[in-house]
Image 1 (cartoon, rainbow over the protein chains, first blue to last red):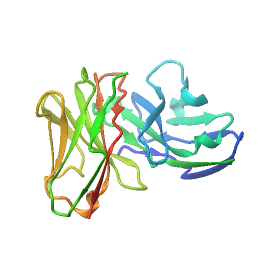
Image 2 (cartoon, each protein chain N blue to C red; image 1 turned 45 degrees about the vertical axis):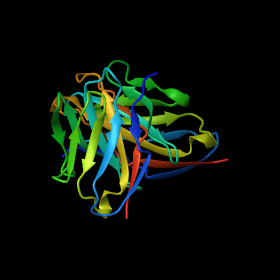
Image 3 (cartoon, each protein chain N blue to C red; image 1 turned 90 degrees about the vertical axis):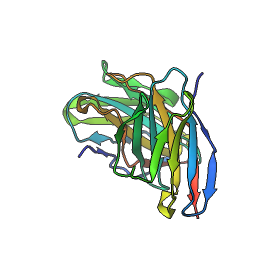
Length: 115
Length: 115
C-alpha cells in the first residue's frame, strides 16, 4: 500500500535552532511532493511543492526541502526557527504513475519552538 | 487571489442526523476532493470527483457518504446518518488539471461534531 512516513512525531527546539523534518514515501515512479503547515486551529497552508527539475525547492517563511529520489525522501529544512513556526507539519505525496491523484499525507510532525 | 471556501465552519449534530457540508471550489477548477482529519490524526482522502462522477473513493467513503455538484459551483458532501466517529475536520480541495503538476487548493475546513 502507498504510504508516507514522517519519523519525527514531536520535535521541540529553541529559537534559532536548525530544523530538519523527515519524509519518506513508499513507492517509485513519478511523484509530486508537498509540505503543508497547520497552525493551531487553522487550515492547511502550502509551504512548498516539488513537481520536477531542481530537487532543492524553496518555499515560504524560509523553508526549503530536498527531493532525493534514490532515498524516496523529501525532507523539510529551515536554518533558524522562530517561535511562530510552532505548528504541525504534514508531508504529502501524489503518485502520478499510479494514475490516481489523491494526496497521501504523512502522520504529521508537531513542532514546538521555545522562545 | 481565488480561494476555496467552505460552509459552515463548524457544524454540531446529533448522532443519526444527516449533514451536508458545502464547498465552493475555485471557479475554473475541474477536479474536486474531500479529505477529513480526525482530531490528532493525519489528513485522509475520502473521495475525488470529476465531470459529475466519483473518480476514486477510499474505504472510509461508504454508503453513508455521498457527493454532489448540484449547481455548477457548489460541491457538497452528505453524510446520511452521522456516527460519533464521523466527528472530524472535513477539507474540500480543488485543482484545475491532473497531470504532472497537481497542486490541490484546500478550503479552511468544516469542523463536524457529532454528539
